[in-house]
Every structure is written in structure tokens, then in C-alpha cells.
Amino acid sequence: MAFLELEQIDKSFGATRVLRDLNLEISEGEFTVLVGPSGCGKSTLLNLVAGLDTIDQGRIRIRGVEMNHVPPARRNIAMVFQSYALYPHLNVRRNMSFALEMQGKPRAERDAAVARVAAQLQLTDLLDRKPAKLSGGQRQRVAIGRALVRNPDVFLFDEPLSNLDAKLRVEMRTLIKRLHQELGTTTLYVTHDQVEAMSLADRIAVMHQGVLQQTGTPAEIYNRPANLFVAGFMGSPPMNLLRVKIAMREERLAACFTLGNGETAALTIKDETAALRALLDREVIMGLRPEAIGDAAHLPGQGFLPVLENLVEVVEPTGADTYLVTRMAGVEVLARARSTTLAQPGKPLRFSVDMSSALFFDPESGRLIS
Ligand SMILES: Nc1ncnc2c1ncn2[C@@H]1O[C@H](COP(=O)(O)OP(=O)(O)O)[C@@H](O)[C@H]1O
Ligand SMILES: [Mg+2]
Image (cartoon, rainbow, N blue to C red; front, side, top):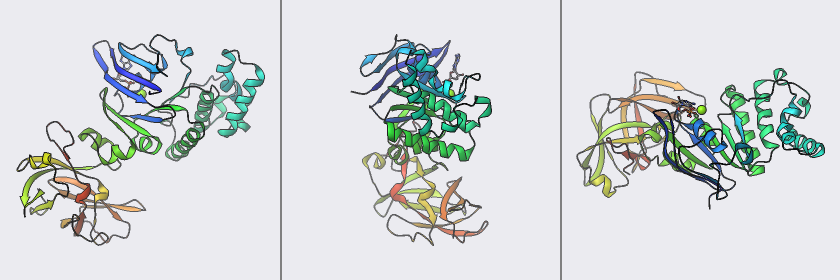
């Protein structure tokens, strides 16, 4: 039995349907990240789980017990918001112990809980400060601490790192992951940042316009996105999507498209599925991650790693890797080369293409074919 169950959830604001027939199950101790673009309904869903808003249809259960009509305070859920939402007139200690005071917990128990969590979050030296005297990262740690002291059944996080600068965001990400490894509390974490989703999650649920697109482990979502939306949304830089024609070459299926110089490339497809064979002579969308296209000087072509020569338009070093912009099937394509690549803008380069990782999508429905 799932620990937290969302069953056929529907929610509208007026005539706007924000969540549609949403089903999600989270096992005990699991860290699930709900990811999707801004406005897709993530906060709405968290608010429903927390009981801050009422659902139109469907059921929310924790440990098999229906929560629909249980008031927020009795759900034993703790939520951390992007805006921190600390009490400005209370110091860090009182901010963290406030919920326990409300529950009527004795002083000694409150102090012990605050001391334990403050140590975990490196807040011990800040317990007497007011929020105004804290940095953004410290405030967010207090907001997390306030949730932790309650020892909840479920943690809900609503984009808790979005207000922090890039370096702090990475540090806090590690802290949150470390805390989850120690405490094992069932968590539903919401973000629009797919890198955050990949790095934190046991399981990812991708949402678009109020509809769940796919749930799976980070590897499943990354390697086998269920549709073009997930393929384009997850991964940074995103997957290259090329319109190709499926044709027969030397008794094997090949993906055919034009290169920058007008020549036609025909790349043999490794996994010939029945679904792909049925699309012979038709156009499909081929997905190739940037790391599947490289400088052939580093990845010699063989088998399903064909080589094709193509013009390099732009060279973008990032330190560890250098991204190369080239053009295939009429669109910009990003290749990931090593930083030692000799590629130069305006010059041709021999690219290798790892066809064993190529994915094919239906251009009409957007669904993964194989
Ligand atoms: N209280 C509300 N009244 C009307 N519309 C709302 C309300 N809350 C959210 N919405 C709308 O619902 C959609 C989803 O919002 P939200 O859940 O906040 O998205 P996200 O958190 O994914 O950015 C948006 O179009 C938003 O404008
Ligand atoms: Mg939101």
C-alpha cells in the first residue's frame, strides 16, 4: 500500500481546470519530486495535500486513511514554502518551536527538538536572532528546521530553493538530500527546475498543464521520456529533436535527414521494433541527447556509432565539456564534445552519433514509439 495516495484528483478555479484526473502514489520513505513549468498546477496540488484548499473530486489518503475532510493541523504534514514564511517578530528558536508550543508540547521536549534540528542544519549559533538578521539561505534553513522539529509523517516542499542564488541552491540541495537519507521521511517536493528534480528524487512525476505526463526514476525519465514534452523538458541542455524519415538502407531501417551542406544522412537504427517498421517511409521525430553526438576524434565511429561530417556553427566551452552547435534536419543541434576538441566555428567537423540511444516519437501524438 502506498503511504501517500492521490487518486483521480480534479481541481478548478472558476472555469479554469487546473488539475485533471491526477493519480500519484508515494511509498513510505520515498522522495518524490513533482516537476513542471510555472503555472502547471504544482502549488495547487501541494495545497490540496496539506489541506489548505479543498479538492473538487478525488481522494487523498495517508496510510490508507482518507484525508479529504481532515483539517490541516491534524494531517501531520509539514510544508516548506519558497517564501520562507517565518514569523518576523520571533527569533529562530521560537520560530522553530512554535508549532510544538501550539501542540502543547512541554518545554523540555521542545528545547530538545530545536537543539537537535538546529545542529543538523547548522543553526545552533543563530537561535537568538530574528529573521531580519539572517541571510536568504539561513532563513530557508530555519523554514526547513521548523518543519523538521514537528517530526511529520509527510514533508511537502514548494520550490524551497528558488529564491537562493545558484551556489547556495546547490549546497541546500545536498543538505536536503542528506537530511532525507538520515530521516527517511516521505517527501513530496515541487520544483520547476529539472536539474533539481533529477538530483534529489527517488522518483520524478512530470506535470504539464495540470496533467501528469510520466512518473519514474530519474534514469527512466531521462532515458525513456514518455513523450516529446518530457523529452524536451527534462535534461540540460535539452534533447535534440530532429524530424527524420524512416527508410530502408541495406536491409536495415535508417533515419534519414539532410545535413547543413544539403547532403542526406542515413543513420542505421539499432533497435528495429515492429512499431518503427510500421512507420517505413514516414516522418518521425528522432531524439538524441547532446552526449549522444560527439567529436569523432574522441569517439571513433563503428557499428551504431556512425560518423558524419557537418559544419560547426558555434563553439561553447563550459569547462569540463565543450558544446558544439551544428545543424541537422534543418534545426540547431547541440553536440557535447570534450574540452580538448579542435572544433572551430565555420569549419566542418566529423561528428559521431550514438544511434544506440536514439529515441523515436510520433510527430502527431508526441508519444514515444521506441
Ligand atoms: N486561488 C486561485 N484562483 C484562481 N486561479 C488560481 C488560483 N491559484 C492558482 N491559480 C491558477 O492555477 C494555475 C496553476 O497554478 P499553480 O498551482 O500556482 O502553478 P505552479 O505552482 O505549478 O506554478 C495557474 O494558472 C494559476 O493562475
Ligand atoms: Mg508554485
